[in-house]
Length: 151
Image (cartoon, rainbow, N blue to C red; front, top):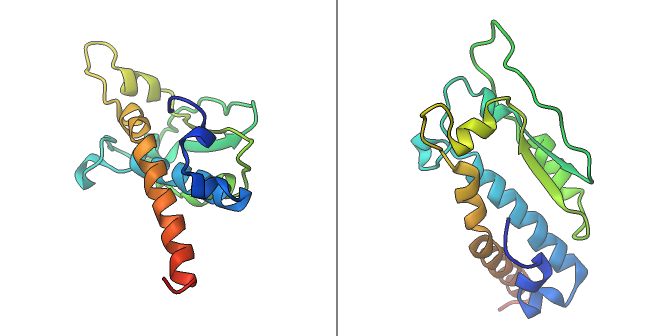
C-alpha cells in the first residue's frame, strides 16, 4: 500500500504508546477500506452494477488468502456489510499485516482493465491516499487525547 513501514510514517507523538499506534493503524485501514468502497455515484471510483464486486470485499490477517468467488445465478442485488471487515481490522495488531481483497472473479480485470476496457483503478487510487490517511488518523488521535485533557 505505501512506501516504507507503517511505523516509520506515524508521528513521534503516536509512537509514544502501542495503543496509539494500533488505533492509528486500525483507523487508517478502516479509512482506506471506506475509500475503496465508495461508489462512483458518491464521489468514489468503485463502479457498481449489482453490488457483487463491492460485497465480495473481505479482510484477513496472516498469510491465508480468501478464495475467488463467482457471482451466483439468479441473484440481482448484493449488499455490502462492513462489519466482518471491521472486526478483522479492529482485532488486528500492528505487527500483523491486514490483507483486504475483492474475491469477485472479475475484480482484477476491473482494477487493471481487460479486453479493451479501461482500468478502474479504485484500489490503487485508495492506496495512493495512505500517507494522507495516516496523517489524518494521527491528528484525530491527538485531538481525541487533547479534548479529554481539556485542551
